[in-house]
Length: 140
Image 1 (cartoon, rainbow, N blue to C red):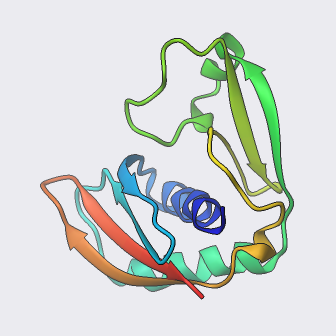
Image 2: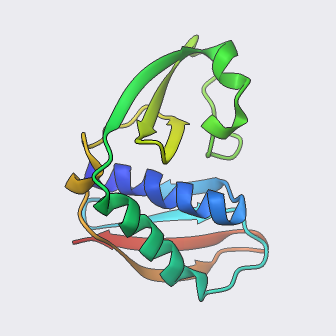
């Protein structure tokens, strides 16, 4: 739950900074990774992403769940951060809100408040193709 919530926060930070979408991820208990569709990337941004994500975590924002009819949800592209992934057979989508910071469609488990997540540390970065960048992080 902690790692999944941190993934939402990091993805929202990167989306707001670069407009990037998630092209893949692997969430684990000790270390996780996410891939983003970014062509040109400046590694110096990693520290900024980490600081901004930790700022959100430290604010202790409530994490809430709601539901939207599929047609209504599809009218708001900001709800979707995964590139080209949305189950076609779901008539109602689950929406996760992290305070006023982020709202997106999601089916996973989350903490109730960002303060439960713990501090995030970006530990690695890799180029995984012409337009794919991979970020690894851990939680303290």
